[in-house]
Amino acid sequence: MTWLAKYKGIAWLALVVMIVPLTVYRYAISGTVNQWRMTGKYRQEIEQLRSTRSLSAKPQSVSTTDTEMILSGFMVAGLLPIIESEDMRIEHFSPCVTSDKDGIILTTGQLSVQGSFAAIVKLLWHIEHDMPYGKIISARYCTTKPRNRGSTKTLTCTIYIQQIMTD
Image (tube, rainbow, N blue to C red; front, side, top):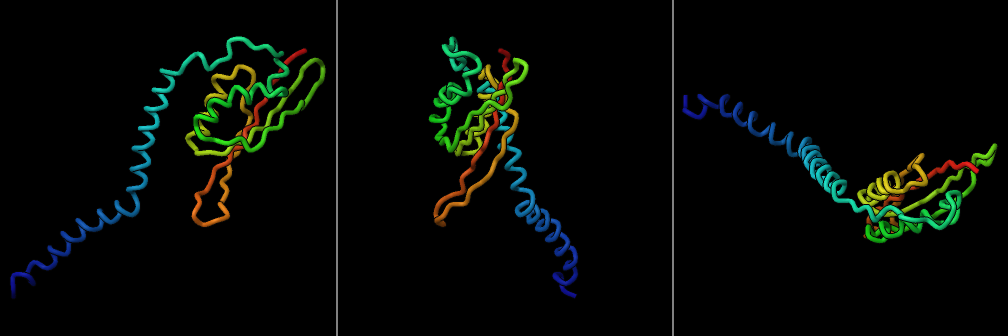
């Protein structure tokens, strides 16, 4: 019996012990591990943004009344610097008075923006934390396939912002 034939089983076992875990990692786990690493990186960036956010983003004085914030477009005007800096595009904005009963005015604004996921999340965070006159009640995402094959998919987010005011 030759030396190779004598240790053939051990060689196959060593090969399987080495190759199978590497193959599983390469094709099944590496994407998850990379996403986990990126999540940690993004978490650090968010913490950095929180600690260094400027107080100048909040409006110091407002000339319109509180009920007119969404209806007059003041909300969109306050969001324009972020939208422009993050290369997003406003697709649609429609404000409306949802309810006006017993001195309570409920105003809802529907804002549709198009851009990258990270930019939209920054916009949502800004609306929720820096805008004193409305809160997000819903956000709906959808992707749009391009007409030509060379373009990339785009992400559209429809944000519903609601404001409750009294007369």
